[in-house]
Length: 345
Image 1 (cartoon, one colour):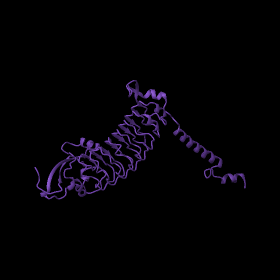
Image 2 (spheres, rainbow, N blue to C red):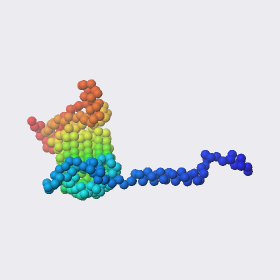
Image 3 (cartoon, helix red, strand yellow):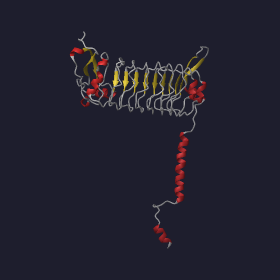
Image 4 (cartoon, rainbow, N blue to C red):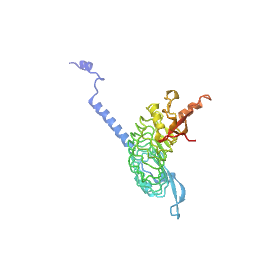
């Protein structure tokens, strides 16, 4: 066979030479390794960053000297904050938008009052018990559980935008002052584990909840946000929840108005009044609320509740509508007593 014939049979697009393949694979591997190496380059906090971020000169706890008590070191691509362990007088710390993966250096900051660690790479919010910590925010990390949060003065905890599937470790004996808990945008499938006696505001929107469980003992609860879930059962509500004023179930409910009526005014909730909200995309798509048939002889309490959409989207829509086309609806909810009798008043 001639050289010309060999050339005619060879198709350069059909197969690459082995050497070129090896070179390409090597280049791709080096590129991937380079990207990984760049991603995990250690970047510890330095004295210069500390000097730039420190502020608020105050007296120390014993009153005999002064120290800076506030640190802001946002968006520095920090991976290591070991230096902070020696700054024991810090009370306010903002380390958001970094690349932190662990919190142990903060365990020495026993005077800490306020902590913000949003947008990092934390997989846990576990810390030693900090006696004065009141506000803590770990939003938009990679946290998978609620273990190791035992700060006795904590009153506000933000864990939204993480990967939490189950609520565990929130000890009601330790978290006696916690009144606001933010858990929106996680992967929760249950509301069990929330036995927190002082809780007033609970945000559970954008999870995977199918029913309400274990919140009946939240007697102080006034705000419950459950938007964008898959709830079909309201049995978790209790007559103990006498202070509940705001309930958001928009795009969460898959039950009929008959079921809603059964839970809004059962005999066990005869003294229970709240401000409910119309939470469907539009009134036309919402099944009308029809209270169940009542025996006039058993009427005991009449409560007036205002039902209106209050989310931002509806306010924008209402702002663009002519006056008189309002979304506000007034329902009279009738609450029964367990025992019969004439209507009082």
